[in-house]
Length: 275
Image 1 (spheres, one colour):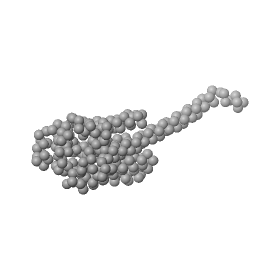
Image 2: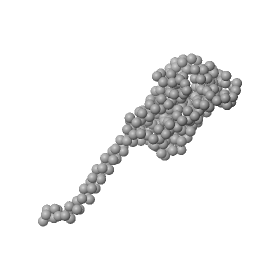
Image 3: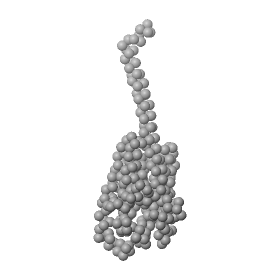
Image 4: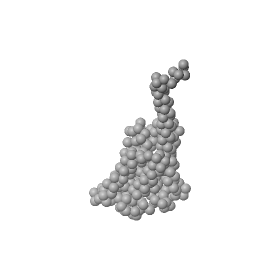
């Protein structure tokens, strides 16, 4: 009788919700596995990007790090501002290393430590801005000949200050959105890309772009940003709209600043301070 009852319409109807529940449980497990894989690929990309950025920084400044503290093309550093250059180099190196360490912490799931070190990064970003602006202005003042191949020292200074300002804005947005990883991560990466202009302008294969009109120093930055965007697309298998927005904004600001650098008003601001 029990066997016969199991085949009744009522028994079959009762079995359907259990089947659906089992299916939902299986689907939920699959969804969770897919989500974990997506998050891992996302976090892994930033570790890869951080390693590449650090390698490019070392490669671009190879004469400084491995050639006895030499400047662009192996030439001596601008002697009047050597202390500022050294402190700035330390701050920039610390930023690149911290960006890598932060990316590794996120990959390992150490989010509490990541947030704690994030405030160190915020302070470091402030130091990079002040030191970078100071060094750029004084370098153009004391060594204007070094920038003749980049359309002159005043124009190149306009590009340097634009990049520093963009770096500050991007970091500020990233910090403000620190609880929103989809915004925080790509904006922090884009800030790192922008501030790497000096290293990229000296790195083989892309250095020629820094001396190519009309973008000059902007060229290597945009090329490197596009490379990392395509790499992220390949690693994560998804289009990152926030990363695209950050890079697109950088490109638009770069283009908008070009007329400023060539304008009579900008040239007159610096007067005789920069030859």
